[in-house]
Image 1 (cartoon, rainbow, N blue to C red):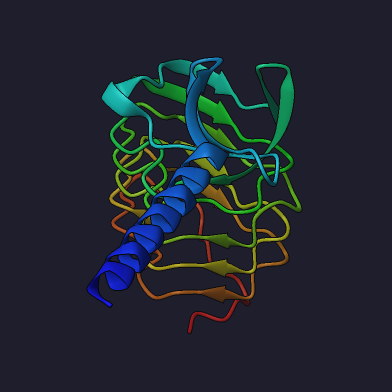
Image 2: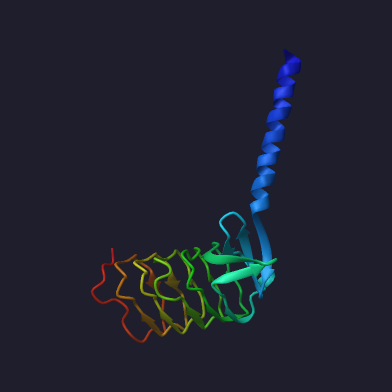
Length: 192
């Protein structure tokens, strides 16, 4: 009976290892066109990954698809803190295929002066997305319905924010300590 139990344990361990190995085979981190991505080989999608060692430099345009080893992956999401502390990043254009912007996506990107997010992509500006970033102006894209707290905080250069008509809710403290702000942000939008 103990021999049978031992065989069952070995069998279960083998199955667990194979499952873990199979999971890892479907997600891989790659570096393409100056940006790190995590590729999902099953869904054929790419997530903008956390950029290591401050690799994001200068002006970056992220395309709708990433081609790696002859396969195309739709860029659909961004990891939390994807560009955090990338102080040499000066501008970025995000793809039309993007559906999720990560929390703290551009945290402390002090030299980031421009970030363009196309309309009808994301539905929320997440927590601390641009905290302490160097943006001068920002246009919230159409389709965004919610701006989370601390999204735009302690941004010493931010002069203007243009809200989309689709914005329905702005959290308290979403826009906080913006000393350079020249125009009002809130109109008839709910601030609950």
